Length: 100
Image (cartoon, helix red, strand yellow):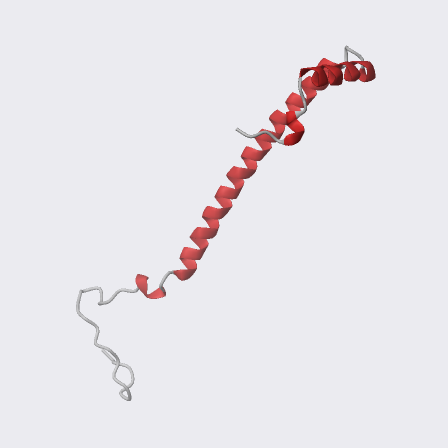
């Protein structure tokens, strides 16, 4: 496993120093509140990301269905014969329409 070069120089004394400076700047009583709010923000972010992923999947599925509908052959839904099952003869050029 490789580490980023910046992460390689961060060790325990540096992390402790960062925490001490944070305690001096914000006060010891506010640090737990900051950590809690950061955790809640992460939780809300992940929930929003999951919701956005579901919406994207739904939109892709709808787009795929619209594309399939657009490609569908119009003649797929046309019956070949009449209701009684007799074949309908093809039209003859020049003779007009058939009368019954």
